[in-house]
Structure formats: C-alpha cells, structure tokens
Image 1 (cartoon, rainbow, N blue to C red):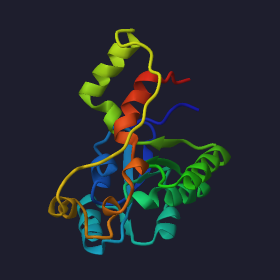
Image 2 (image 1 turned 45 degrees about the horizontal axis):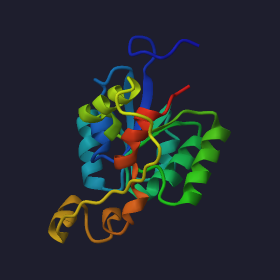
Image 3 (image 1 turned 90 degrees about the horizontal axis):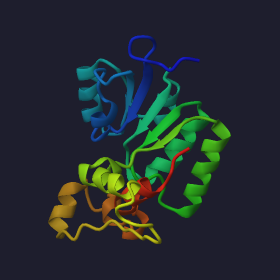
Length: 200
C-alpha cells in the first residue's frame, strides 16, 4: 500500500485537547493531514475551535472515537494519556501522544501491550529531541565527538513560585502540581536517548 499523501488520501486526524493540541494537528494546512474532529471537556473553547475550523466536536471521548478517522492526537492532561491511548488503539486508531506517555510503570506496561496487540502506530511526541541544541548534541554524538554514553537519569522540575505554577496550570488539582518530578523525566532524558539509540 502506498503511503498516504496530501494529494492522494490525507490521514484523517482527531485531536483531543483544544489547547496545545491545536498546535500539533489543529490545521488542515499541515501536509498530509486532514483534521476531522476535536474532543475536549472545556465546552466553550471546544465550540469556538470547532466553528473556526469547521469540524465535528465531542465532549465524550468514546463518541469521539466513533468518528471516522485514521489517527488520534492526544494533548489532554498528563494522567489521561495512557488510558486514552489504550482505548484509541483498541478502537483501531493510530495514536500520537504528548508527553508523558504514562504516569505509572503499570500504565507503561499496559500501553506497550496495547500497541503490540493493535499492530498500529504509536508515536510518543516528546518535543525536546527536536530542539536545535539537542539536534546538535545528537550530531556530535553520532560523529564520535562525545564518547560513549554509559548512564543517565532525568527528572522534570521547574523551581518556580506557586503563582507561576498556578498560572501555567488550571488550578491546584492540575497534574503539574502533584506529579513527582521523576515521573516526567522525558524532557531531560529523551534527547540523550534520541542521540544514542539506533532505530531500526
């Protein structure tokens, strides 16, 4: 089967999360994609985005999954990514998920098993490996200028006062305010993994 292209048959995408999610797939100008549906529990913002983009909107994720589409972009809350991805894969949709993929080891195992069972594509959309300075680190490492990587750890921590943290979130119960920093290690460790791992 030939890969889908914008000219032939675009990939029909639904986006969960009309905040950051619209920056990833919320446009039909993205080459090869066709935005067909949006899902969010923030009804006012969802309605505005749906009207502006001319697509179907859903507040219920199960109803959203019944919409005819090829793939789902998950840009909802951190702790929802794994359960939503597992459900989307079971519904026959490819998945691209914002960070983090899961917030417990058990969810990570369940997610891997769901991907393997579905035989569909799951993309973990960690953005830090694509930053210019991390791409340079990758280039230097792969040319042998840095040496062999032996061990790494990572955590995610913004040492900001509470007022800044609350401004970045939607209240005290937002995941950014309660998650242990070691659970969200991909911003710091993903660029190293990207530089050092050979993909097959």
